[in-house]
Image (cartoon, rainbow, N blue to C red; front, side, top):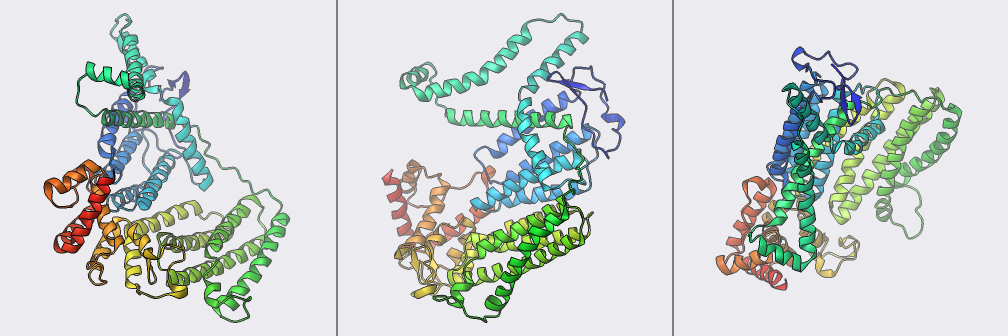
Length: 567
């Protein structure tokens, strides 16, 4: 393959160390200064930008999201095929995981889960790209993170590359046709540069000065929402330039594949500081076994076993993470030594005790104060740390153990299960199942010093009111059983009213028309593009409950009309 010049620099098409030779049909004969993949990258990026905008414009978690994820993967695999590179076996797992996260995104209404899903999609996709384009067998997690950051940031340097490639392409076409070079292309490029700039400038000036906006309205009497146009255009341009720039950056294949052996540190230094840490852990683990698990020994004054057991779990989670990093850093930085390995093994075993201690404390805390998303996530994180610590323990004695890939697969599988479980549903179910009205004292659930109206018995209803729509089947399903439908509680009314308000994007004019024109406070139907399983199910459950409970319907109507009149 002949070299290609981009931004006056010569690069070759990406070829990983172990990749097979390009297939004959992938070979492209191109002049020296022409990007051989310009047609594919240019047209492909335009098509990708169109579907990216259609799928995602003002639609962060609709049914189109998995199609966006699948289309992104398809575009990348077509790029690999065009480059003559065969996808590696792990690509199947990565692609399935990406699609699973995309599906999870359109089945939940939890903002936290949606954010974590997108974060996972971002890192998994960059891992997919780097894994297929480089020989990454020896790479560790910091290397992947640095490489993903490198590709993301340095892609900005290629933001004008589509114009440069188009200019070279047209110039070569003109030469091939024996036509003299005219000035038309410069006018074309000038328009290309001016149009987006003028669009942004006019929008800013339109919103900055009332006189200018009034003149503009009289000159162009168009009943059109420029906000949507600017949003659509901005998203389209972002997707086009981002996809094209990233492919250009990947084409340089400039990341170092080799990972130098840094195990040159003196083991005595490692033995010294890990030995001191191990002594502290020995004392701490003895205390956990005797005082926490065994219930023996004398506690400090003003302490009960209940209060002692319920504190310190977050600190222990951080200590477990420190231990995991400590073991991995020592194995990467110090020369092999039996004593050091023994101490690291002991620290790993102590970490298991700390994980058990933190889990036990958290479970006791949940018994007293019920569930929250953070508490559920901590339990999930403790199990993840347990698996990662087990992998680190294996690495101490098997240096060729693929720890990074083990971490990737373990965390990905566990997170996908966590995401599809919809924690808000189980939080609402557990808290309402354990609702004990009128109880007081230490187990009254009011650990956040909330107003008395927010807490009833041992249950924090302010927290339940702010759960996502994933919890709607439980909240409405238990409403009659617990007496929330008769003389409806404020939080239950607020939760239902929120379903209606969100469906109308909190637009007060629409909410006012809702009651005046229809006489019913029912949620707005979702468009096919924005369909979300959790929201659709919550709207149907709410509608059925609203129609069958007149007193609840009256409270909802008052709540929504009061909200709309305030604005």
